Length: 286
Image (tube, rainbow, N blue to C red; front, top):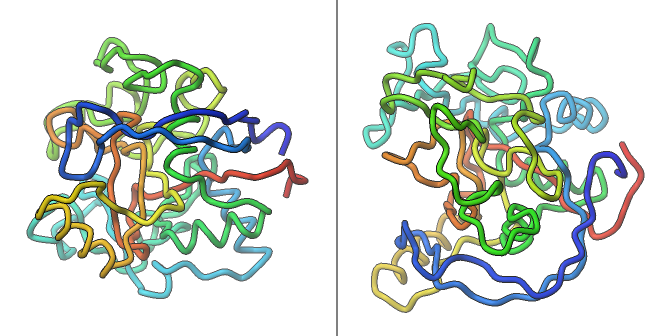
């Protein structure tokens, strides 16, 4: 994986922040950790890479087995034809949507093979990682890698907030969820090697797609709300997701920050869920 993954020396590190912006998901408290050396891929796993995995193994994703997945409404020709959750009406439940048909039947990877694989559940991501000799990164490893050797930045590039004039990543631009100005050139996903990499040479650590981590989702608090959230997370087998996606905006989902996080059931699948792979040692490219 010499040209695909970078070596991270590890050592003393930390997870989270002292002054959480979205405290209900456990961005704090900031806590010390010590990391062993590891490798992490420069890019999220692309559609073409995931296709190689499927062709080699015959793997069937959870979205394919369930028969549907969530697609963002602006990516559909006729969004009104599809059922939507009451709490998040911008999502549509699309029959047949999966990694090789991102918007359902009639769509394909053609022309976007280098975009991140989406509609990927935690189990799907774990299966791919195992196949290529790796694993999913821990949340602590992900944050350490995302900082790109900076001391404690808010974003992989530093502390400057993205704007329409200063574009660092693929996030929402406009009025969520109806108007996306797409100043960065993308309404949906962008190629996995878009925008400038961070100090470790890693692309799109925030924005573009949420990335699964190996950790079980947990909030480190003894408060009543946190205890109930942790009980729910355990009941639904939730795992940690990092980095936000092309749907994040400071006014709605300010989670394209390094410390931001989310917890979702391990079988969650949507048009903005992807992953990248970590390794304990260098392995042969697949």
